[in-house]
Image 1: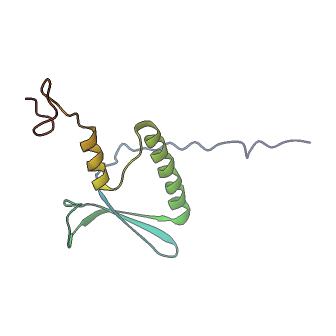
Image 2 (image 1 turned 90 degrees about the vertical axis):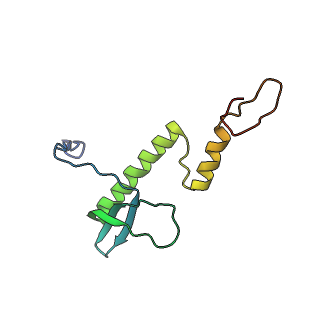
Image 3 (image 1 turned 30 degrees about the vertical axis):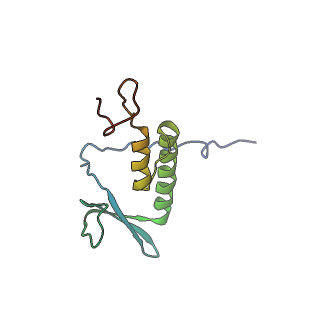
Length: 122
């Protein structure tokens, strides 16, 4: 009985990114139609401001749900690897700020307890 190895062959994809323009985004809006997922990326100059915020979307990526699910898997694996190396990514900015304050060393004068602003040596 002859075996076919076609299923065992892997496809190798080479990506030409020589003309790709990088851009930064701290905002993403996700919408969908029955056939597609739409990702709008932009820069929010006041991400922690209250009230109305106007954000200009400067990139739009439209993909089918199969590609979106593959993207979800790839992003999940990337985040897991990052957190495994560098620790958990805290999304709550108040908790992040509290963690930074707790990590700052308290400088003290000899024979005295902490005094003055954190980081100031007497």
